[in-house]
Length: 285
Image (cartoon, rainbow, N blue to C red):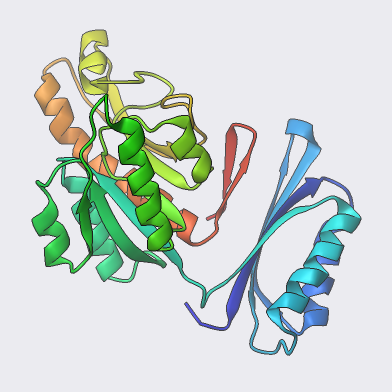
């Protein structure tokens, strides 16, 4: 991604002229629109827009740009977010003992497929420290128990502040986060659930699927909320199975799906392609 680009996302009441006013704002700055996408949502008659534009011709300071955007937003009741490509997000990965999602994220990051920096890996076990070492990513083990959960989360949040973490990826981190932790990163904690939500929430979703004799299994990436496994869904995918597959077969088959939906969600978040409204996500492609 060019260092001279920016991404603007916004939503507001669906009224005539929004595209014109946003385009004129960028034009008058001296920017050049590279890509623009929009969506009209029937819920509350809401309009969503994502604009990716070149900033090479802009002579104004970023403070001036933000001030101008704030004026535009106030005029049309917009909720906006503006990010510049040279201000890369910093990602923390939380993991327990399963390594497949962690490896996939680190490899994709190494290949330049994730537009963010990996700040650190946090785990409640030491099992995957060698993986972090292989990829030269800082690793911190913070054990968690029922008695120490509050203290452990406080330490993790302090680590995130020290490493200037912008968003968090739960790559099969097998702990339930408290509302206090989630509120610190609202809509910035991406979880992968090894089930096709909202079906089969909670523990052992593949075993639940087996007991129900399903013919499709899937995985879901979503933003973590205090309501377990019920946060805004970002990506889902399924594969076909049959009565001949055991629970262990379903677990094995599901690994590829888990990797894919998680990495897709992380890429979209890093690129500012996701907007959350109520319980829904608008994911621009």
